[in-house]
Length: 427
Image 1 (cartoon, rainbow, N blue to C red):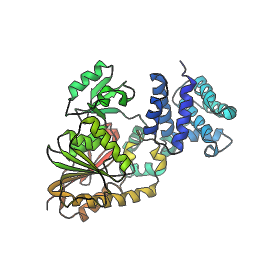
Image 2: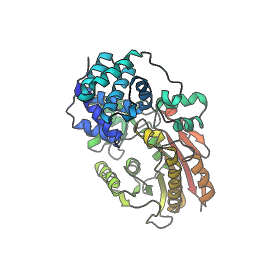
Image 3: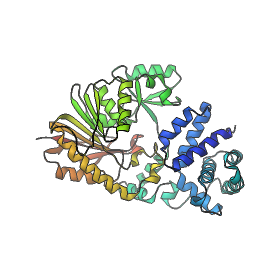
Image 4: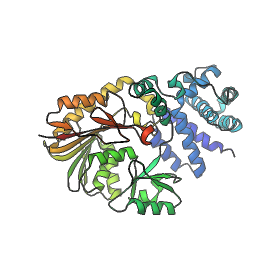
């Protein structure tokens, strides 16, 4: 059965807004909540938008030889309609729906062009031509492909690239202050949600068939928080203990800070952006984390005395290559030069974070990326520059050692990609 054109019209509008700078993971759920579309159509729009953004390079390679004008010179709504239609054709949606209904949703003045180009694409497959270039085939900028290829054996590279184009699992973290995994499983199952235990974090819950997570009573009422297992694993590595004083540097939007507070620690969550720090405070209120304090602060000049905290978490701003499933537009917005700037910022933040750690305390550096500049290069600098700190053995399988730190690769763990380095202050 074909979908209503309204779903495709909304998808085109969302694609235009994302190309103009909106964030997919923020824009799409918000617009769908107010769209009036049925649950099935909301799911369809999510599939279309995330997939079209992820596969943009491959789609443009299909469209370009069949379009008289360069794709990047078309008006944004026309370009969005063409990419949307090509994505549907590549993913097995019947041509009469992929072409016909996309044409109906396209700008009226351009429907002839959209119809002609998409019909030519439909005639090219299936199977559609497979590009020789891995960057085009898997739809990544070449520099990202080269970065992954430089750090993994050849047989793993395409598995990681393929995983980056898969929808990310929705995972819930039970609020251990008020519930547990078994109780939450029962609640969700009774509501018709499919639930299974996480493979990496056993008390996390991988859920399907629940729609908008914010609409779940368990989330709205503070019994659960959507959080990938990779992020939950960073808190496990930090290993906060009840009553300890913990600093979460660059804490927004608050997933890790609230997870730490749920374990009974006293948390100070800082961020340089007051608006984003408000998200942390809102999450803390929802979850009942009364021992979580927020403070606007530049992580390069913290307003705390030396040795104030038992443990410090620096989940640093980074290039985000480990979360491209969730933030598909990021692959088109990050350039290689920005990675060096980010690595410089990470070193500055680590210098200040180290100062805040008490003797005998733990400093955890994590990033949701896998570039060498932000992982092994920062690690090497930290071991040379942070006096009094020694590395702690990294977590084991499925984490993979990288120097004294470790990487969590999506193809091994089914999670976001993460890097972690753990240091202990000996003096």
